[in-house]
Structures are given as structure tokens and as C-alpha cells.
Image (cartoon, rainbow, N blue to C red; front, top):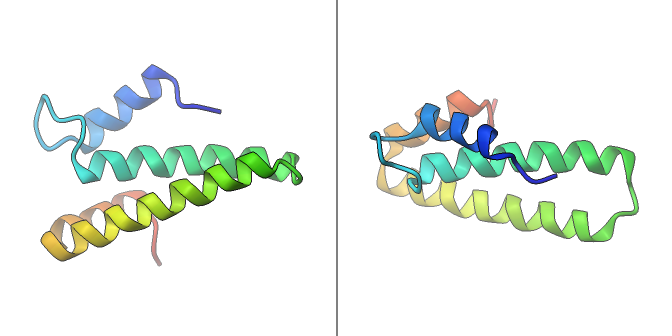
Length: 89
């Protein structure tokens, strides 16, 4: 269920602010979004997997905190991330 190194590398290349960036809010949000998508797929097949449910809720709340942080500090970066990931309609 965890992301492979290659998947993370692709995400980092797409959302990094500069060449050596691996921890900006945009990168973290994109990685969390991909992990949430994978867990949702797992939970559709395994409805009673309580630890996975807890994990997805933890990841969603962490992503929500990061989105709130970036929306306060840089609204234009927030809009760019939301649009790129298709999080809000």
C-alpha cells in the first residue's frame, strides 16, 4: 500500500519548488493525496480493515493541516496545488 520510490520521485519532480526540494508543502500534499487514493482503493475491497481506516483518516487530517498552512501563507500556491491535484470542485 505504500508508495514506491519511483512513484514518489515522479511526484517530487512534478511539485518541487526547485531541484533539491523534497519537503515543501506542495510535495507533501501531493504524496499524501496519492497515498490516500491507494488506501481508498484498498478499503473498497476490505471494508473491515480498521487500521487502514485509521491510517486514511490520519493522512487526510495531515493533508488538511498542510492545505490550511499553505492557504494562509501563500494563496496563489494553494490555488495551484488544488487545481493540479483536483481536490476541490
